Image (cartoon, rainbow, N blue to C red; front, side):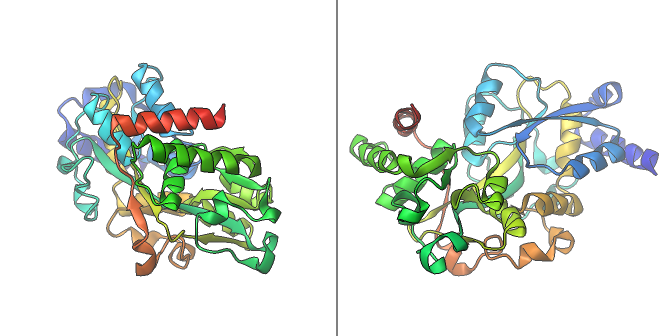
Length: 349
């Protein structure tokens, strides 16, 4: 059976590129992904079906991944950047053109994920997971068992939550949430608005137990923190372990993001990487990734393989009213990013 799968993917690889010899010679691939963001069983099945051995390395932010790629280190064949980071990598020549529209499974990508603003023709990327960033909290740890759907609860916390708050160590997420709360644009470059954001974050800082984008599921589920700025898929996994945890979408707006699979410049196993990207566009494989991560995918037909608990979770399967609060993450100007970096450096010094 395994040999049949390998043969099938050799044929598929040949349709993606004439340079199939790379697959036959190396049979390996190095994946650089966010931590705890890919099912180990899924990777094992990929290895069994294709004969390609996968080495996994992880990172905690787009910035740390980008810094390593820019420095030419790692020897990675596939990385998993968020939309604006894809756009920046394309602009800086850090990703290879792969023309995903020629992939046999490209037809499975749902609209509008088949032509996103950051890569309209999907010439450089394919979609992986997408989700939101909002607030998770333990209902057993707040007075009355419920909080308002506002970023105020996070940035101006109740007394019982002081010292028990977790924030993502992600400048775009933290800065963006503060900007929404104050009524500013996610990509503001106004120094006066930047100063107000800094003041808000510095005022909140004594109430924060930790800034860390890794380990959020365990911190929330164990009760280490009572409130956490959190991605909705991570919340879904934490809620399975601790049912008293709830998730709210602040009325001021929340980030809507999408992660993607790309092949970085300098990849040594390009054809193997293309095989992996095409394989991940199959409904069953995308669904298995969703079942593990708790995030939505962009693949038609994956629903039939997804866990019922995801369909029943309002943090994942959201209402039309909630969708109206979504703010797609944008690629900001250099001036806006420089302002954000200065604020972030000041905050964490």
